[in-house]
Length: 363
Image 1: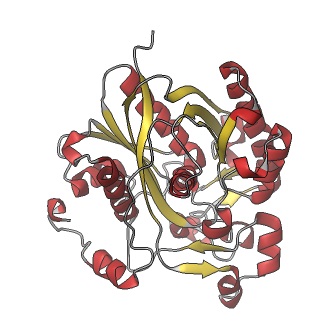
Image 2: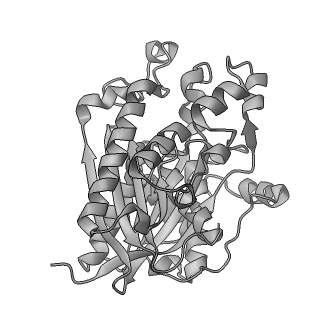
């Protein structure tokens, strides 16, 4: 029997300042156009890392902002979970590296490799740990450098993705606030609809695998589209039914940001109004595990989320996997965050300080 409820009490993000527009992709010689990308995906631009930043660096800045806004120190954490498919290394886990950079020595940490569903799976794990009493404060991060695994000769995939990170802090909250329900699911029979063939034990790196471009994302876009619309609708409807509320009761609906046509189709089938739906795919593309927490960040900053509002999050991803959660927002307006996004000089100074071999506690 659940003895307490968990909720999100802070959020932070990091988006590289380097903007790559659809027109930039045209100039790179990719067989595409701004009109082709916009009409099929809704994407206008995306962020791509520069200066050699690593995935753990993106996680670090997003996490520091989230911790600062709620007034926690790294020592206050009981658990760190990082959702990513673009870790610094296959091992150790990126969460381990992040913990070191934060100075969270001794804190348990692990990664989740569920691609676009990773963040929902991460907050499920965090929520379960808090509700059981085995953890009090948990940091969950969705962080990706998708540009590192894109085939820039494949216009069907390379135009879709971007880089970025966002982090949330969870702890126990008073009823009726916090997470009410979760739905998770997967069907591994369709794993080859969206995957990266090379790099694992099934296909270790070799001259042949590199020549055949097997270390990049491969996707059957049409089949993934149909799957996404179906599952996002089903998950959303079941969560609403189990909670005894209607689409009209939802304050904001935050779906995974993969394609504006998927979002629009799901919104229409659920009967939601435009003002209820949060979208930012036009600015950032698909940042995989970071899309939903980034959208939470922006919705909160814009005053679209207020304490007590019903928030519906839903996702789909490689695996194939899917998931959703329904919560009532648990906190009042958060203090303003900090970002290097508009200050390239500060960003360059910050990124140049991140060098392998440094004492992470000094970062």
